[in-house]
Length: 246
Ligand SMILES: NC(=O)c1ccc[n+]([C@@H]2O[C@H](COP(=O)([O-])OP(=O)(O)OC[C@H]3O[C@@H](n4cnc5c(N)ncnc54)[C@H](OP(=O)(O)O)[C@@H]3O)[C@@H](O)[C@H]2O)c1
Image: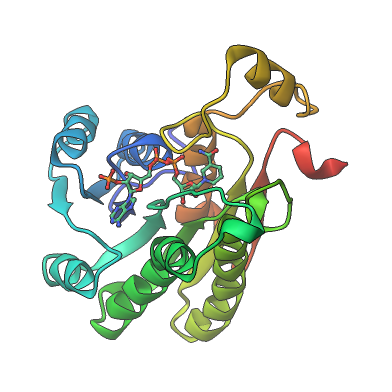
């Protein structure tokens, strides 16, 4: 028996930030479950590396800087109709309050919050989101879990979470779903540079005793993309090994 409600056969999925970390893993894991992938990012070499690791055929790769309107136009002009999108592209920058400049806030919010909003709007207006499609946004537990220097990042992810709830309500008329995943620490290019000792101490704050892995976020995205989550919309799914329980 081949019963699997998480299968992605026949679904075309766009993954942003697919050249690294969580986006790369999400694209690879989705391809293993039968999806046709369109992967995007700015770094051509790293995007090609992801492309080579995709399972199956008919995938595509598009280079675009989605913090710019021209990048979003370029992407949307070359996309087929989609059954799902996983917005992984994001950046992190730490600055304590007294050192924050308006340009730094704008730069970070542009990619973490404004880019997913404007890309979603473009896909919606161009009718590239098929009825019953699923939109997944990678937020962060940092949206409401404070640490020194994280005000800019926290606020970008808090805005993203609120956007997802508003969006889920608006697009429900098309039976399109929108959900966010908020992970705790996953070691990727985006992670803060810590010594092995500090990593060990920090990971001990997690009740499950370790940081997460990119594929553990990817599997949650697969659930939200698949028919298994057909009645789930407007949710913010926390994946943090229990970090925010206390
Ligand atoms: N790692 C963590 O601990 C963690 C925890 C919670 C949430 N998150 C969130 O998860 C998402 C993925 O993070 P990650 O850890 O996988 O980071 P990562 O390894 O640094 O990957 C970030 C990705 O974003 C892309 N990107 C950045 N700016 C872009 C732009 N202007 N246009 C297009 N693509 C752009 C990068 O592509 P190029 O390099 O090709 O430009 C890269 O593929 C982010 O939204 C992050 O906030 C991460």
